[in-house]
Amino acid sequence: MSLVKKFATVASGTLMSRALGFGREMLMAAALGTGPVADAFNAAFQFPNTFRRLFAEGAFNAAFVPLFAKEIEQHGNEGAKRFSEEVFGVLFSALLALTIAMELAMPLIVRYLVAPGFADIPGKFETTVRLATIMFPYLICMSLGAMMAGMLNSLRRYFAAAIAPAFLNIILISVLGYAWYHGLDAHDVGFGLSWGVLAAGIVQLAIVWIAVRNAGISIGFRRPKMTPNVKRLLILALPAAITGGITQINQLIGTAIASAQNSAVSSLAYADRIYQLPLGVVGVAVAIVLLPELSRALKSGNLVEAANLQNRSVEFTLFMTLPAAAALWVMSEPIVRLVYERGAFAANHSTPIVASILAIFGLGLPAFVLIKAFTPGYFAREDTRTPMIFAAISVGVNVATALSLFPSMGAPGIAVASAVAGWVNALMLLGMLIRRGHWGRDVPLLKRIPRLVLSAVVMAVALYFAEHYFAARIGPGSPLVVKATTVLGLVAGGAALYFITAFGTGGADFGMIRRNVKRGEAKGAPASKPNLDE
Image 1 (spheres, helix red, strand yellow):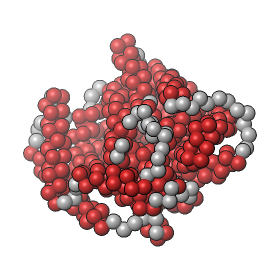
Image 2 (tube, one colour):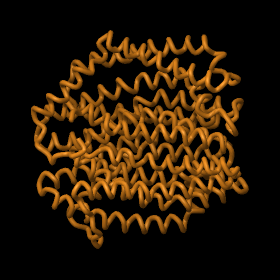
Image 3 (cartoon, one colour):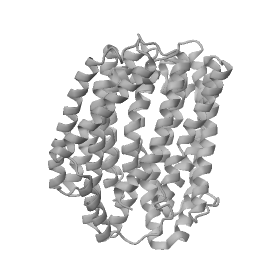
Image 4 (tube, one colour):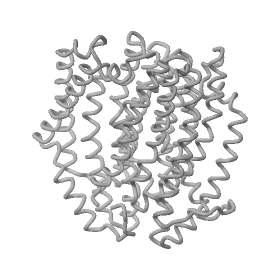
């Protein structure tokens, strides 16, 4: 299976999850708007979600996958099973202790870390504490699930791990549908969603656990013990957790700062959901597929294959994200109006703020995705310290910029800080790879980049004039069907113009990409366990 096909396999599952996430956020915006319950739920959910990314997805996709892949290569499935059980015992015990401590300390955590701005608002602080208390055990399910997803990715079984997150959105959409049918108030909707998050964690864990068993590895519980393998994992995982969760760290900081202003937390969350679609479909797919593939190439000493994988990944990343960034910048308000503007979501207040945040996030989108393409170049070499240092620098940039801009710009200032921090991080990662000689100079890639940028600019200019021409059809008073067909038509027309320009100028050639990837695999990819999913 070619690299592009593997990206597509993961992206298809992620796309389903993100599309359902759109539906979830549309219903949530209609039910809660940007009111106090929406702020409370988004702040409460941000906390366990950040921990999940820090200590689960970030750490295990960065540290666990290369070590698990090494066990498979050296000791087969039996060695991989033993290593997994060692890690499972330590991880489960640590998560259980962390969850108990966090549950007991939740009022202090919300007051001083998650949403300090809520402390003086009657009812809002208490609601946030209760919602966070309900949702925090979600961390256990998702952390164990992330470990098993890493196992599946190392075995080149990508689909189950990619499709599992969709069940969070399926369950929450069901909760919102039930709330709408029975006419529940905002308070009851918030608590229903929180219990739905916990239920979704259990379902997602069950899906990947079953998939791992079907892959031939049955994980049993072992008494927690610091074996050499576990120690090596922890040494790699601590900095990897910080690096892999850098976007979530910045979001948590942004949430804490935004809690000082009404509606700011939920406005950031709604904008985040839209830009997460291209980020998840492209960025997550690249990161999940590239890390185990790059690890295998380096372990087998095939440096040509490793360089080819990195360059093709960046090429694919830029080809897909540059037009998305341009579209979000130019068409943020029509998109927000179409997706959210109904029910409790106010056109005169909520739409302009969320649209301005989304436009700024669009400018940072290529950086956020490139970070996911660059970091495997470090993690596959078991270097998690360098990306951690760069992540810490970008967090500092984010905090300083957000604190400087928030008093004058409000929530959009936090988006500016996030975008600036993303570009700083991406450029540092690329610079160090080049300096160390871990990034091969690829002339075709260097020729394609300016042509892809030009294609995105041409598309953005065309969309700008088209948006003004069809202003009446996409305005607040336009019927939903007219608004939807016009916005989707503009997006489709912009995409067609981009692809025509990109292929016409030589910025893209998918045939060449596929041939290069397959040729790279044929030349040096080591033999691996057959993948029944292929």
